[in-house]
Image: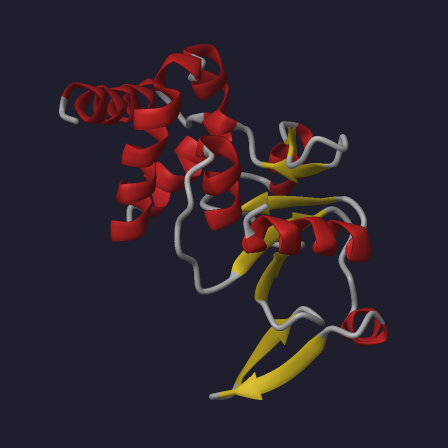
Amino acid sequence: MKPIIREAFNITKDLGSVTFVGAVAVILQTNELRQSQDIDFVIANEISNEELLNKQYRIVQENKKEKKYTPRGYKIDIYSSRDLNDIPLQTIIDKAQAIPIDNKGNTVNTMSLETLIVSKFRANRDQDVEDLNRIVKTRYKDISVDNLRELTKNDTELKNIQNTLRFFAENP
């Protein structure tokens, strides 16, 4: 098992129901390794710093910014109160998929394929474009236009996403 996926599983054991976004979601949806500086996840119920500290998580101030780390040293970003790339957190949670991570029946929750695509399209950073390309290369046939339509703001955004996905599919 990839170390970052093992850590995602440990976070799930530590904190309960979480849904992974970002690099972990890309890795789980494509089964391809990708580098990441941190592990991002959505949690339905806000968790206090005190609760994190009680679970051996570390919280440090760096450059006037609070950074959180798992007991095993991974940096984490927790989304519990603000939308992610204009996608409501509850939508991410409601549409989450449990992805098997081993042959023992263990799973980790991640963004659905289409939610991940919309999020990456809206973020539009270099890494997000790379991730979209990776998603298309491994999962293009699995993408549901109906699910994309539910998540996009309008027909224009849907068409732009479809054109981007088609471009990656036609230009390996």
